[in-house]
Image 1 (spheres, rainbow, N blue to C red):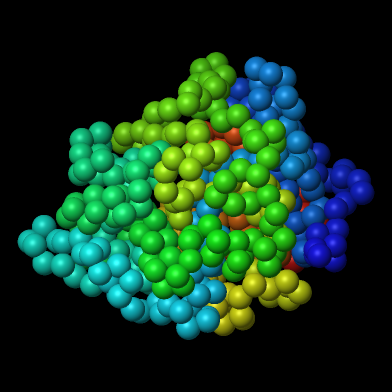
Image 2: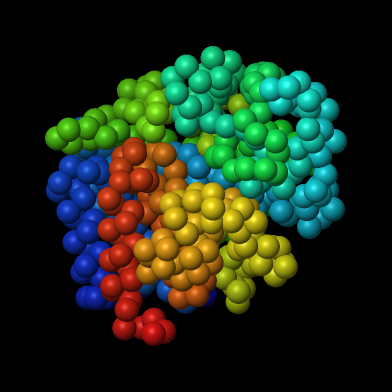
Length: 394
């Protein structure tokens, strides 16, 4: 289906040696255990590499079709599903979530219950939070709210717990990364009368031939082993892990990818391959023959209704529907073009799509947190632009 969109390069261009070096150094210096890195330019994959180990202790090498727990790489896929429902008239961005979830009415500290819209959930402006972004004694932790990576309860119970915590700010007046997509997943199910996994399959993964991506792993033999940052090298994650991050830690439960023990998290619950996600990114290109959404919807997705004051990935970055949006490249100190979309996943992933230079990069690793927020994603980004400098507009 995608032969014309994803012609795989027969030979790696010599100019990508700088990217090979960046990957090799990250592995040799013990920053990551393994990775799959894909680079596309003008709709064609011009670099592809599987490096390091899928399982270091078993000596299992990384392979290009390795399956990763995607964490927040889930969010763009679910956001596209929501917007498909909007195009079909099944949801409206400005309607209140209580239309679909009448019991979900979190309150302000003064006891008032402001309206939360679908738009606010999509853009993380609803006043919600994530437990891993709070201190260890933060309100979400005290309430037992799941961030989606360790879900061992029903979605209904998690919504009840979320609604029981006071809003951090009035909806629409701030930005804070949050469990909003999990709330949105429940609203999607109610609006369409279908389960989240089936909705995403029907609206996104099947149309884009993303055969290895879903809320349950289809081939456990290709699932990579997760690692966490360690010294002098990453440490294999236990079945239930607490990985230090920001003010607190992120709780991972590895069997969520292979069992039905918890709810399917719309913000963090999918697994899939690098090639599948590249298919998704390339469907956003202006002239893609496999466009999933109409031109007006994609244009809206590439805007930043949450301005750069939010600094969602540092100075110069705002936020849109499912990802951060580059508003000011100079302020951000990046070679990426204005309007670049970018995000990652805490299991160790990063990705971006630069529509100005028509570059898409997917870098999935099995090392948290380095693969998402360490030196590795920056080294990959810079190497890609150095490799392509002679073919990019000046």
